[in-house]
Length: 73
Length: 216
Image (tube, rainbow over all chains, first blue to last red):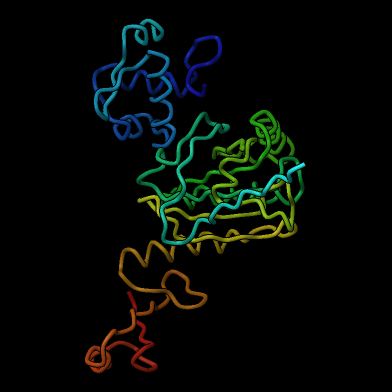
């Protein structure tokens, strides 16, 4: 995974994305703008963090889950 | 023993939607649809740790900032593994001081290469030739370039193509041979006799009714 290391810790870009959705539902476009990451990377990263249970998708927007919040600390 | 028949797949063509894919890359698993809304240059190279490909990758990295200004993403591809790609880009950075900022598909099972017609058995049965697919924000193929294994690509031409395609889309015009930004563009030819007659009165620089240019 590109956003979550095999040891379960989010990478630098993964952390940026998780922090961006910490405050509430955000679209990949908003996350890309806030983090400065390319949109394709944000789309792929949020798909990955959702599969890992760290974020939750509602239509085309994402928010942090309890598991994601714990990981961020 | 029955001979295995070679699977014939249609080649992608200009004006068609680019074949969808989901692929492992040096920046995670990417889908074609992740690039929706941006221009995308999908390009293949024969193999990591080879001389011509290394010069090309450094050249692609050099034009990357110019492409970013134009809303274009780059995505490389070869049939090498992700570990090989990672080792190669690290080597390029260490030995040549060039950081490769874009993702590279590890197409070990050749799924993407086959879908895009990147393997030309007459040149190599195992490696991808040097293909360039320019895909627009609606994921339509707008340009296809094929170069042989022996010959590195011209980055100026790739940037020029992007400028030309974006100008065509923005202004509804065409671009003449060797066009560069700032040059006159071609007004699309008229479709009827009446339009042809009117065209000559419209103040364009016309060689004849079918070849008229204008400044943007």
